[in-house]
Image (cartoon, rainbow, N blue to C red):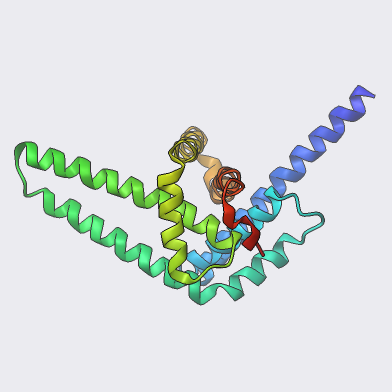
Length: 208
């Protein structure tokens, strides 16, 4: 009996790993298929749509079908979100270049401020991606709600950032796995953390 349970557990782990690898390869393939510029954000949104289904334990889903459907449906809107995030990231990068001309304490304090803003924007982006596949809102509301969630649930934010850092550290130890599981595993971890936060929110009834 114990042997059978161990075999079933081993089979479940192997099945889970295979699904994660296939999802990651889908993400990479569609990102590259869109020449990165046009493919990365739609593919990332599609990946989060799949991990959301897994976290919600939706039975018998065809994750390739969910991925492809989300990629097609959200292609233009996801790229618009990507463009906005890219412009923000570019502005922050230019700010970092600019403060290199400063001296002394001003340079140090300015650098710390920019790093804090970068971290803030990174977490907002994570909440935004998970929120985007979680509920349907007017476009600008995704940004507003993501900022409000960040400010309203600091502990959840810290846990999410900590989880992402731990996963990043894991891949630094095992860099050979980056190509096969990095995107999908980070997406799953972020979705698990964000979903726990979303269950506390009143807009949960707007899920689709």
